[in-house]
Length: 186
Image 1 (cartoon, one colour):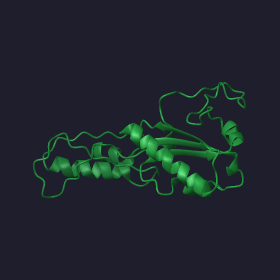
Image 2: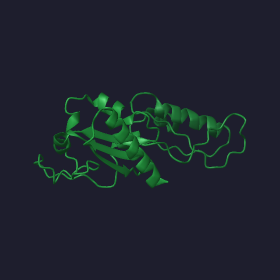
Image 3: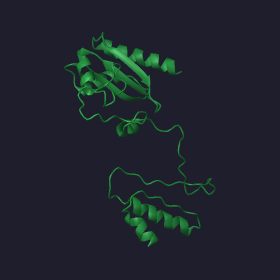
Image 4: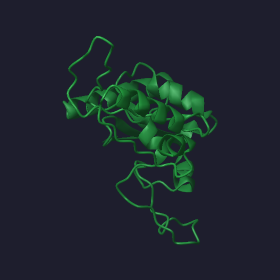
């Protein structure tokens, strides 16, 4: 299935480029470890195009997840520090414009790549008030990129409610200055 998807994706990209009279583009596709596809399209015909025009043209009619897309000229590829196929970054130690020799850790995605990845294959269970026999351990997560939104307080309040229902509760809060847990545990 993966090879068929890759070939189908490449064919759609070529059709989208052909509709814009671009026939000399270099298209590179690689399976993303986060269940999507990494796509790089390199063509000097993109020179006067905006980023949004490049993206919308290439992704027109494509319904499989493209988790990462580079669409640019050969010069843009080199200046951005991408490898020849533009699907991976050149480690900083090898980048021609780098003076500090600080390398990247291979194998882990950057934060924007992780957020752009598709959802997990395992769907979470969202219990309702009708569910009485959920299998333990139950996990509640309070998440936000912003600070000061009350995650720790919500965690502490939820813990008190669950403890009041004679549930075993473990609280883990990685915020060392969390006011909610300090108030809960005294």
